[in-house]
Image 1 (cartoon, rainbow, N blue to C red):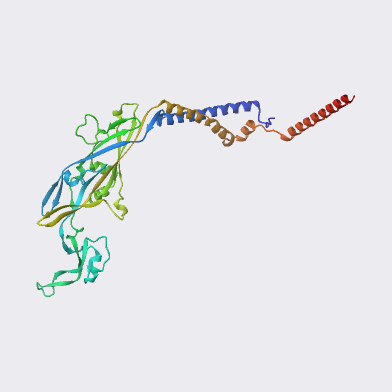
Image 2 (tube, rainbow, N blue to C red):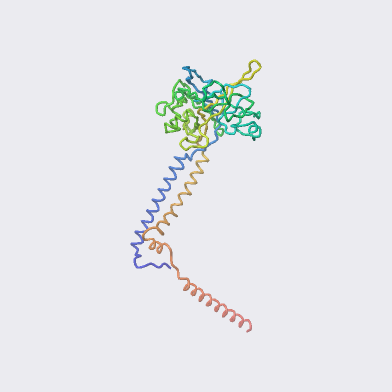
Length: 409
């Protein structure tokens, strides 16, 4: 039995029933429209997708740099000089600054920058444990540097009070305080990014170069298909601070070049082109990290008159690392059918959402609940059923007694 309060007139019920129906339809339309636009249009729910990309990347640098050396000399450097090593997998290093030291196999004093090498006797050089910064094998001798006797203005040499431990190895040691040689013209150098990819699910192969590629420089507006970038452009994309960019050229840095392929294979595959993004991977200098920039050492060694010589180079520069990702989609009837079924299931959520809004959030939620849910008095119902059962039992007993009396007679 439905119990209505005094304001639940048929007119009220009719008006609010219409409002409920309208609200339900609006919510259904909104959910269906949003789901359709997002799932089928934006997410391309009618396509099967492949995010596995097999790629091959080749990087080629071009540019002529110059290095000023004392006294008033200039060294011209080409690709073979500043690209080290000549070839890497998905990466390239451009040397922008370096320190060179000419050495030979001999014995000599340790670097004065190594505090443990400062000595006053030989025992201090023979009882030292292994030190990672050693430049060679210590011989156990303490070498004192001659100094002029300035007191009496004589040319006689006297021994200083402290010396440096002697080592056997490549001499002299590298001097980090010596003037570095900066390669000028680095920002105008170019890097050609040649990429070939394959989406194995579809067996589709493509590249980031147009068929009629001509000498060009990438421009985000006028020349987006050109795969040749200037180092200046990549630096500005990866780092906004001009001071940081200058420090990266002087002390090195690491930049990630990301190529993302978003291909719609329902169209011509030649229309599929990558998006280039550049991000800095090393820690900015302004944060004062433990290790700054990017550098390494390499040597060129030769032998002359039974003596071994080498040129030790500490190279600073920019290391570019390539990462390739992609997402290719192509029409698939089964995928479309499954997503349409999902939309139909989502459509049923509208009824649940409408009930929550009307029955619990709206201002007249109590009125709706009283109209929708029927209140039942269980006790009267139970008593009525109980009386009916007892009456039926009495009737059955009377019938049994009558049947028994008839049989006796």
